[in-house]
Length: 445
Image 1 (cartoon, helix red, strand yellow):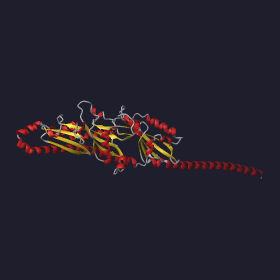
Image 2 (tube, rainbow, N blue to C red):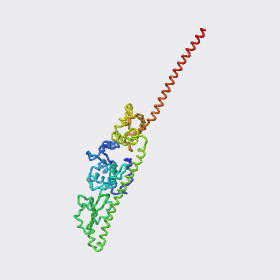
Image 3 (cartoon, one colour):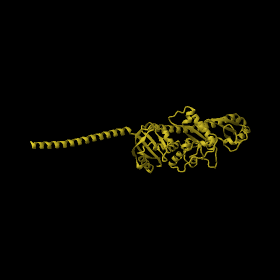
Image 4 (cartoon, rainbow, N blue to C red):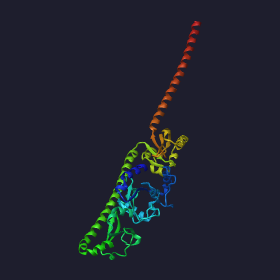
């Protein structure tokens, strides 16, 4: 699993300002069902963010809060915990990305980063992240396997200034969300002066662009400076005007597509890193023969290996849903031992306390009694914040049975030797009695 530090280091290595100008940040938003909201909030707070909460408030069946965002600057911090799925325009793009498995550009939005000064229109580009090991080649499987979204955020003025700042002195460029040309849909205006209609300019162009499944309308018209040169040198300007406007439109389209491609490449690379990291983790953990688990500080299970079903008969989903199940399957005679052990680890405050182990019995789903060798230790993040404890349960029932059989055989052997000793002692008494009788008989004779 990619951790917070790994995510930060990866985005820092991308050098967004140099290689991907216009991107305000790269984030990861996690899919959190309502039933897991409390455990999720406690886990994030335990990572060193005591004020963390999901916003906006309210009861919803599903939440998709931003849990990673880099660079973690003052403005980007406002996005931490924001439920991206709670806003309709973002949700539409997220659903399109989830259902198609491809990057999706949102419509016009107000970025959460905006603080009220020099506000700009914004857009987000989403890329879905699916659970490793599950198919996502159909619509149903993609919806069932989604675990979150990677997103790149853009402020439109900053993006467009990077793309063509040196080429707009003689042309007004306006970008609109969708196909409607109005103040409501305006994403960007190079000169902050609206024109009533393209027909007012001698040279003008209106073009629709398809970017990551979303439509933009780009309007370009000549400005008075260009029109003055057109009037003073009309024969030459008219000859090149059409070509110039076409080239400008082509250049802008290519630059927008290039920016989109860079953002998409960054998101895909992040998705690949997440998938590869999760793959390595799952192969090691899911194929372990022992019953491995990670329990958070609030008692919830953050990970349970599939092998638990082979040992205790209960699936890992049952432990995720009901963390108290662990205590209920402990043999009643061993419950105090396990409770004491758990309390000791809950009170752990440093890694120096090391690893501890105990042996106890459980009652499986089908009523069998099994012996477990349990070893665990506290775990911490890179900053030293406690994250709970990591444990391993090994089925030692056969070993215990062999030990019990050996113990029984030893007890039987000891009893047999005791009986033999008693018989020997009785024989010795009889021998002494016989010798006394012989002596008495000899005396009489």
